[in-house]
Length: 163
Image 1 (cartoon, rainbow, N blue to C red):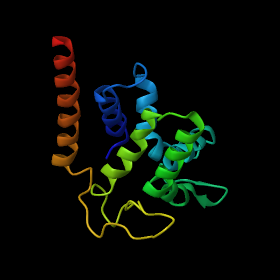
Image 2 (cartoon, helix red, strand yellow; image 1 turned 90 degrees about the vertical axis):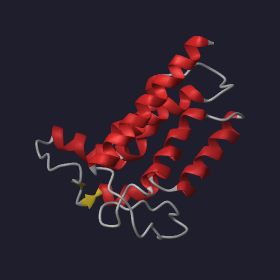
Image 3 (cartoon, rainbow, N blue to C red; image 1 turned 120 degrees about the vertical axis):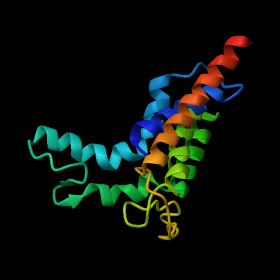
């Protein structure tokens, strides 16, 4: 799924959660939705801009392919659940914007093919990935994702305004 759609989906999710403790900060929701891609792909991208060696978002830092190295950590439901529960214990309440990280992973599982960054959602317990998938960049998937999120936000906003 494209990085912006992940942010929009988490924003929509946060706006529909009932009984949340505080008003939704849209930027906080968007950041948690895009964070799993921002870390492995954004770091080399930004460093490439500053070093005038922009070779795409699959660049390397000190000879290490950061996307390949960091992607399993940011796309693991095991790691997400562990961090989510640790934050819960520390804060003594749920940190709901962080659900965007988990939603990002769940959405990526079927929307990545085995050939292009398959989602290692069981890492570090297992390296098993879904042996099939539909590329998120397929036009009907990409358009559908945006239609769904925009409809979700529109109908939620309309329903809330009637209340």
